[in-house]
Amino acid sequence: MGSLFDDMRQLESAEAFFEFFGVEYDQAVVNVSRLHILQRFHRYLRQVPDLAAQDVAGQRRLCAEQLERAYRDFVASSPLREKVFKVFRDAEGVKTVSVDSLRAALR
Image 1 (cartoon, rainbow, N blue to C red):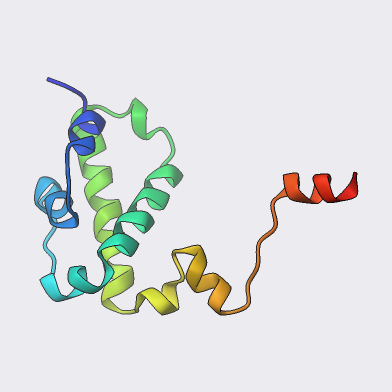
Image 2: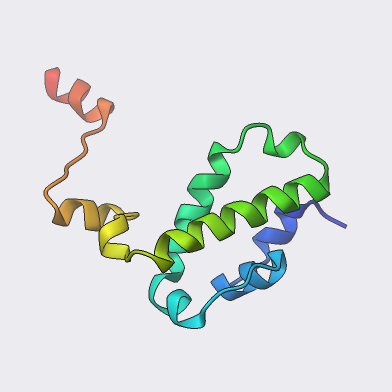
């Protein structure tokens, strides 16, 4: 049997993530914000210190907590307000410039 993260790679929908981790959800929220929830979930997972060092039960618990946290962000808000993806940040006039592009411009 593979690791928890190998198992997660096999999941093909937002609903599959919720079911895999046993997190309750409202289908209407997921229908509107599925990609935003999964992207925020991914961001939250990257912020968990030593996630890979946990045993499988600990990893599963922490992942479930982060998925629920990401989901709650969109229960009380919207993709437009949360601005998970660059296209929404750009719509507000927020621009980001990479350090590499700045260096290239200075040459």
